[in-house]
Picture 1 (cartoon, rainbow, N blue to C red):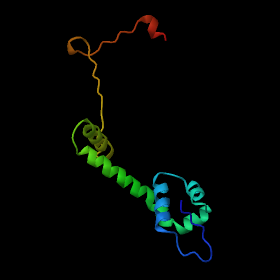
Picture 2: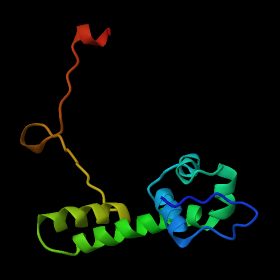
Picture 3: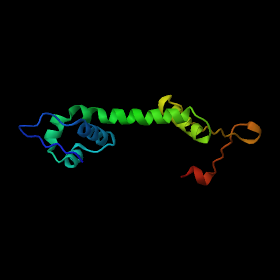
Picture 4: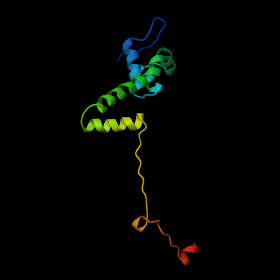
Length: 120
């Protein structure tokens, strides 16, 4: 693992280090955890990797959305499941269950209250 430990002679983190920070941020790791992996203080992490920390989750979400979209527009059972999920999440589709109750032959329900129940 390439680690970046800034000193007076260091210019910038390498592209590999930037990719690693961006990936870890995309996976949802906290800045303190990423700093531990990179073997630097959290303040230096924020100083040298601001863009990667800010964009990591966006790129990760985009990659997952791309994969889900590809599956949802494909064929088979997996496509149906992915499409339903996509439409619920993105198109605000919802499932609803309505239950209608009626009395005998579709008449209104008749409610009878006994004298004993009336005192409750």
